[in-house]
Image 1 (cartoon, rainbow, N blue to C red):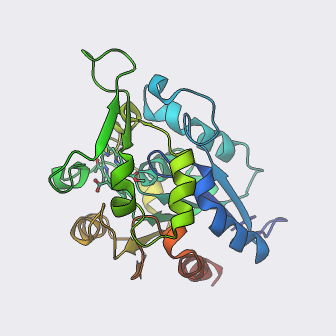
Image 2: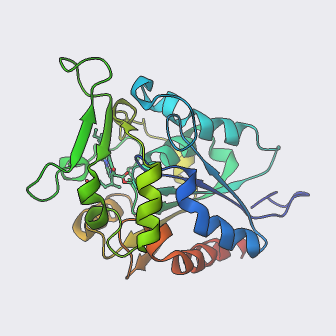
Length: 262
Ligand SMILES: CC[C@H]1c2cc3[nH]c4c(c3C)C(=O)[C@H](C(=O)OC)c4c3nc(cc4[nH]c(cc(n2)[C@@H]1C)c(C(C)=O)c4C)[C@@H](C)[C@@H]3CCC(=O)O
């Protein structure tokens, strides 16, 4: 995994956040993994976390994903990583999988957009409307007569849709750190051409059973449309398993990678 039989046997996890989040949201997982002797990295995509770019200026997925692509292209020769993506960060994982296939030993999706390259995503999947109310706040970096450039979930809906089962401290932390996400970067999602090489990399899906944002039906549809090699269900998890069930998620990640070692 680390070295694929070479000199560097370390198992290296790379974490990719979802919309508006950042590397910071993985702090519990990276602490657990590091303490257990694994290597972990978490990236801030362009305009997220402490990446200084204004997200309203991010034009496309290539620009948004560049920090992840840089991390992968800087890996030593033969070093492979396990890529873990949350939510719409699953789109970044799939793009990386197509671009850097030989650097990735396993792709793990956590309540994430797992859309097969070359397929036509179902409109049910990309529908951001949940419930009756408008839960999203848009920013118009190019003027109100132009399409929005950023989107952020309104503060009053976050507890319910992102963090219903998570500790309140993490809800407070996120209120300081969430940033508008670059909508234009997401528009490329599901537009990748077919990629038979990327299809050979094992994929794992982690379903979040108490998720008020990405419900079971839609997660099941993703799994049905592009069946992974392993499927786990986080029964007590809200949309943000890294906060609500970090130790269960940690255990499931280790179980998933144990199949690589056989
Ligand atoms: C501009 C529409 C664009 C899109 C935006 C978007 N998607 C999610 C967020 C935003 C702003 C979230 O906040 C949430 C997330 O990342 O939480 C941390 C999002 C999700 N997107 C999912 C799946 C999914 N999204 C799309 C497409 C888009 N999302 C638009 C292009 C697709 C497809 C097929 O195109 C898919 C599969 C989930 C993993 C989460 C939950 C969102 C929800 O259920 O509404």
